[in-house]
Image (cartoon, rainbow, N blue to C red; front, side, top):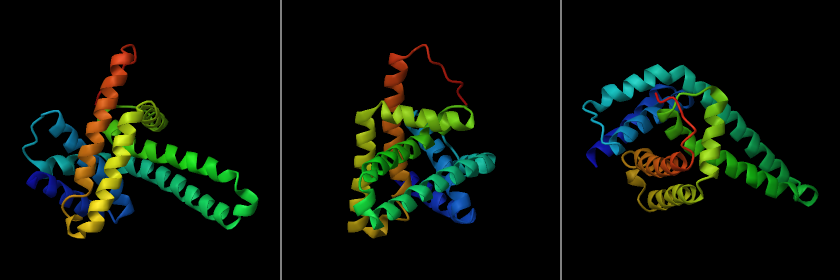
Length: 196
């Protein structure tokens, strides 16, 4: 638990060092990369050095993805606000927006474990993240449940935010996404990815 708390502090610290938005995606992927090694029983002797190496190496690339997800997220929020203000005229668009938002969230949640495990082109990451999440209903439900449970716990015990938020969620998401990937690989052995 001490390592998980330390990793969470690194995640928060490097997000701040990267001026918030610019540091968020590199710090999150660095956190997921370490969690992935833990779950695969790979040794991580120096957490700080491993975190910093990934953060520095992927900084520019991940900010491109960060910009993509932020822009799409902004558009969805803006559309929701617009439809809400004009619900009498645009109520039929609400289910469509809700569906697109769920697709967006699924893609975002699976993006981080996918990015840490595979070498792909820009939009392949987006496509595969969505397809894996959409084709793994049980694992996706488990991830959303973990997110909700963490939200409830934070509401009850806000003091855990600096120690057990991002890193705990990263463990849950990575564990579930690994299960989803193993199932998919078992069904589609002909599909191969170039591992990082």
